[in-house]
Image (cartoon, rainbow, N blue to C red; front, side, top):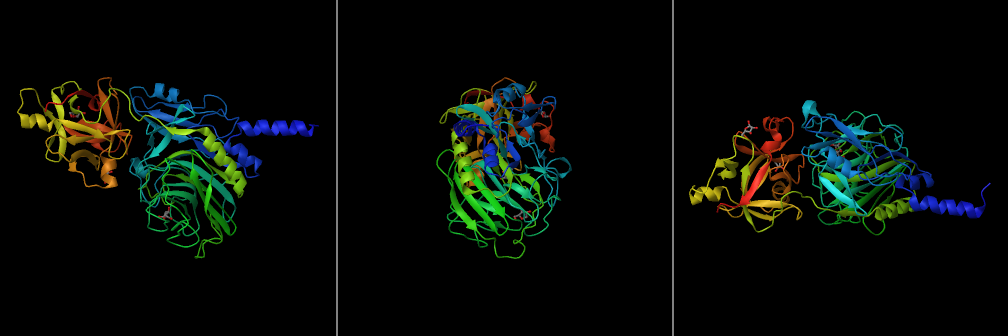
Length: 498
Ligand code: AHR
Ligand code: AHR
Ligand code: AHR
């Protein structure tokens, strides 16, 4: 028999090292799914967090926490992925329920990958630190999605559940639907009330909140609810935190949306009350599959970044969620560098020389709006030299990366469009800024730099038949060919010709 004093001491010790799922268990609502590429979500968890596959030989490895309950071993990933590309192939369920998330299959909509599957995320698109230790999140570009259809232990029908996710509050769009949570087992839209998932973004197709977004909403199928009413609910605020905690829960005639800065402070309640008074949403008809980055019917146009998230059985109390938020804050999420390799400096002008054997007299240049490679030298005309000269500017969508402005056409930048690289005038849109932002990293073949798309981090500047693309290392387009990929994406940096 423990004395009361011993129990208190044990309780304090457990609380000090408790992970989010230990806190939910203590609150009587255990996790039935726990997903994170950044850290263990139980104090005792030391198993695999996620699996990655590298482009060089298609082999896989798993990444685990450095210590039980700790941060992911990002160095193991960096070593495994050195001089090649890596994709996140499995996000393991730490709860023991086997709810591992893998490449989402086609459904009401096809994904862009082979056989209508969605794309997998790059393993390096979302670097962060947790209390100073490096880890990687899951950077979901449009077309990317993860899912498990036959969820185990997830809520079905009107059963109660809770969930939270830690997200990048600055990475979002208005497409359907950057979700994490409960969805259809068939990958198709089976009607109102068949989903209950966290949504994050600035879609106004269904619900929306105050300001221009992004908002946390709940995807209940054929509707994103921001509060009691369809459409607008003033109490759901636009969020501008770099790291966002989104907490959602739903049970018989009750549900709630709560949110916070994941790096400090406490959760606010944006809605808590009865079910929406529209046909199909009370009672709910939850099906119990789990989605990440997509809508219930595999709508896959949305983008966002996921660091960690869980689903529980039972409706968590606000107090339990508040303790989870405190734990997330203690995890110490912070930004870190997006770049590596030779330094680029905003304001300098550069020329980029091809390193693929047989093509090394060619530089990245343009012909009208087509970005290509051309043979340029110090004896070329000034006009030709200017075609191959690029001003480096601070990344239009992310100040940790860069954009490339044409020296002969000021105001025009290299951007991807349908994964072609084009030279287009800045049109002032968020889409343009994102399409025109690239993150240099140490060249995949060791010679200079490789320029990774910020918005599609599986894709790099790549010449193919002397034309530039945003290409992935293997993929459905011809220019994604794995042959010569490392050389084709590696460019030596020189002071600009002109
Ligand atoms: O509820 C919004 C979206 O509508 C769902 O995610 C999708 O399944 C349907 O297209
Ligand atoms: O290049 C891929 C996408 O194609 C861009 O993000 C978008 O602008 C275009 O539709
Ligand atoms: O761009 C020139 C060559 O075209 C690339 O090296 C090769 O991958 C493609 O065939």
